[in-house]
Image (cartoon, rainbow, N blue to C red; front, side, top):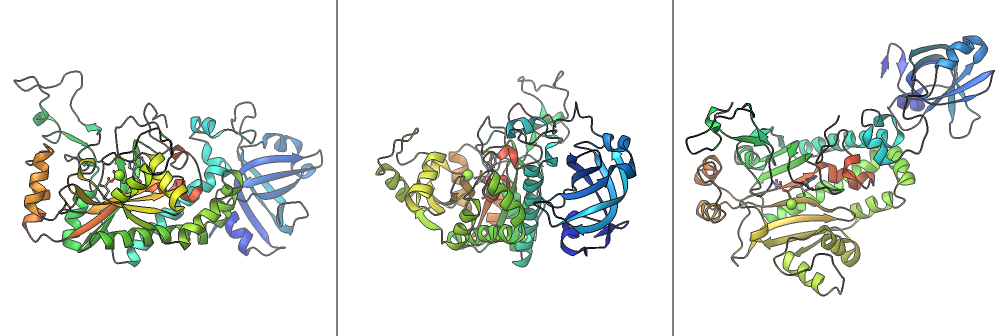
Length: 465
Ligand code: 4AD
Ligand code: MG
């Protein structure tokens, strides 16, 4: 794409003929050289590679060159020539050079390479200008695009579910309240509770923890839908895999049983990883070199191998017989910790695992109940290095069973009337799952901390940018 004659470096490296005139605009990553000649490594964000601009100092004056420092933004026009320098095939011999904005050497924090990821989190406004975050955010885009591509190709409709909601889809999660009430002067009911009837929506509302319940309404009409939006959890989880605000992809399919759901989840994940291998190799190679030497091999391995499928009960048996010392002891009924999930995936099967039929007491109210009275038709997809990447289930389509479960869990049947109506009017077997977008990104980028795969992470005590 050209913009006033400008080529982005990504396109320039592919199509610009050597000997031709090019216009480049971008941010200076490094400046080297001597009194006579300066070499500016410029990056414009389109690709991991920099383009070297060779500047004849006498031609533009020492004053201008002094102002062009690491972090500055420049535009240069000139001839594209073959480069004799290491690490690049072409460079630009500047004929015009313009400084858009300088960057004070003493104040610009990205003066040198090699900052820690922890430090870069403190400058989330500037970290996209590093190689690492450029690569990660380009891959984030590629994965978002691939997700829409996959579902569109498979006949799914993108359904926008609300961010502000009165329901609690997972029934367990801590939620962020949404209110327009004056917190210093709350209206009260006669018994002293906050009177949400006087609030903006006339009732208590919160940020959604999942678009699933509304997604099910869509599936019961359009057949195949997916949501892809931000979700919010006010849990105090300070781990490398939890965010308070994360993006989730939730397909929901009428007439799908749990096996169909597993097939879709496996095919979908493999498509996304294959897409990354086909479209993001430059960034993948960079990230593999910097952080995770086995990254590309691991991605290929997941694409090439069938996921193992087994029940929770079988999984527990393997863990109990493993002889492994786990921090959290294993017995039937426990909620699996990431150490357990990773043992199954990384040590025992050495393959992604889909675990099904969990105890009903550790899963949400909407999951289809098995005949044993103890388990539900849940499925979690467990990945190497990540643990749970997908959580899903077949849904309970029997209205009576669902009502009974809602009662048992002391959830509000009154608030769920619209959800229950899908089971009263034309109920059908259906299934769905949720893929955590940032967990997917952790996997495909090889990054170790979920705070480093979202531009502006929200975690407990952290919402600066
Ligand atoms: O297992 P979860 O809680 O399932 C649901 O919300 C269902 N309503 C999904 C469905 O069936 N439609 O969350 C789904 C996925 C997890 O497997 C995980 O990848 C991700 O969302 N996830 C988180 N990612 C980042 N930070 C958190 N705090 C997350 N909690 C869940
Ligand atoms: Mg889950």
